[in-house]
Image 1 (cartoon, protein in one colour):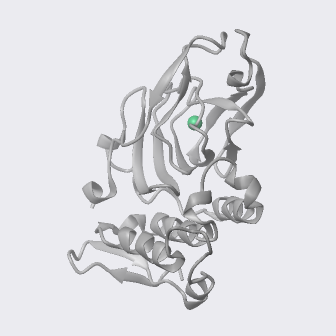
Image 2 (cartoon, helix red, strand yellow):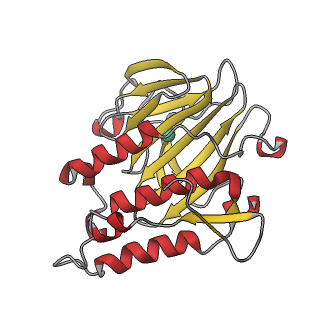
Length: 257
Ligand SMILES: [Fe+2]
């Protein structure tokens, strides 16, 4: 499946998504009672949307990953892809987890161009955004870049280190407390290539940074989110503001082609 790419008709430089296999297509029910969208058409529309735009050939493994994610998530009716979908659809969650764990095909060359990096900062590079389902992006972290403490807008966050070394701290989500309190550190970890961090807002809020060296990471948010909580420091739970994430990318796939 991974090497069966379709050639994009618009450019000899680009390739589109792999041809979908027959088993995956037949595994999707034609419709689900109570679901406002025809089931198969939702999935086909999602794949067609990804296929519609020419994208860099080097990023084909990441597009395959996105297509496989579409297949896995097609088990969940669109109206149920919210709240605690990972509790109502635990097998889907385990399949997504296994998919991310098994991915080992790198960053698709996104880390190569020098202009993709910013000194002392991190940059975001969109792979795929499927509304109501997931956002997938590659992030490049220059040395000394670091996030504030932040939540993920009710999404499940999957982060995989692709190269380099990261540091990550988890804190109990203070939004669960009414009173102002000290942020409680629960995990202080070094993340190496292949390591995965999987959290939602009930598990933890976190800080990710590059104190020792550059690193590259893959991020998948299920579903994608546009607003979250950002804390001013890692001390006081009440010192926070709303952050905005949607559409804020340093490069888009069709601009990298
Ligand atoms: Fe995060």
